[in-house]
Picture: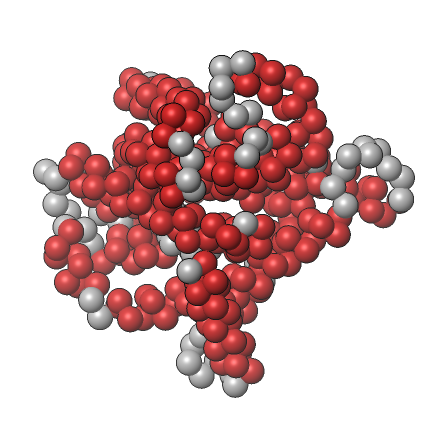
Amino acid sequence: MEKIVLYIVASFFVIGCLDYILGNKLKLGVNFEAGINNMGPLALSMIGILSITPIISDIIIRYIAPLTSSIGIDSSIISSSFIAIDMGAFNIARNVGGSNELVYFSGVLIASILGCTISFTLPLALGMIKDKNIHALCKGILCGIVTLPIGLFIGGMMLGLPIRIILINLMPIIIFSVVVSIGLSIGIDKVIIIFSYMGKSIVILGFLGLGIQGFTSISGIIIFKSLMPIEEALITVGKIAIFLGGAYVMLEIVKKILSTQINKITEKIGVNASSVAALIGSLASAIVVFSTFEELDERGKVICSAFSVAGAYVLGGQLGYVATEAREIVLIYIITKLICGVLAIILAFLITKEVNTIK
């Protein structure tokens, strides 16, 4: 089944490539080009952190693993809760995790949802939206974080993990969800500051890694023996960019098919057309949501923010990474993220049912 998903994306890649050659007659070539053009930004954000994942792994194995193993929790759960899958979490999980199933559970499922939210999505959102919208954002993020243990439990079951193992390894996530929920409820400003610093710290760490990798690559002087070879990092980035060339075309066709139904959808779910468009666009990237946040109505802001915790990037760069590094669980990855995203939307609907601001 996973191969079917990859074959579909590959077919859209060819369609986009042909349309690009023919002068963008179907308006798909531009999406193909946009996907490939991600290679530069991806390299800037990923090469550094990927390069130093062996070093981070050594630190986890030496200092954190003994503590987590004593209580039965896989050490990769900790790193995957704070680092996105494509910012090094999967590589770290692969180095420090236990079984393959636990590596996939933490390095793919947890890292693509919670890790991505903490290290990328939330800092990104806080940097893009206006202060007056922070309350709606946090309310949505709260919905996404509170519901994610349910989706992750289902994902763990699909991976074949025993229920006991899933529950034990979900305990840090559940505790974190409760703490974040309480924090967002009673002290939003402090939580925002903490998340912002965490995101910035990971970005800085990545650029330090890029600096070390760049110096090593150019000068030939080895600073850290365990540094990942630059060829491996570049291959990963290149494969993701190629994948996005097909994924963007696929998403554009999906949006065109659904465009005629958007008015009906807005009436049914009680949000404006911009909110529906942003929700669909977030399947590729949460940037679509937060770059158009002002155009969304109040309910749409909460719903789209909630979905961005898990549902964002499900057909974007993360899918490209999973298809490159863990293609055998592509379908489980997609299903888990969508389950978490839908649950977050349902909760967001419930807490905003009195709001009706269609424009």
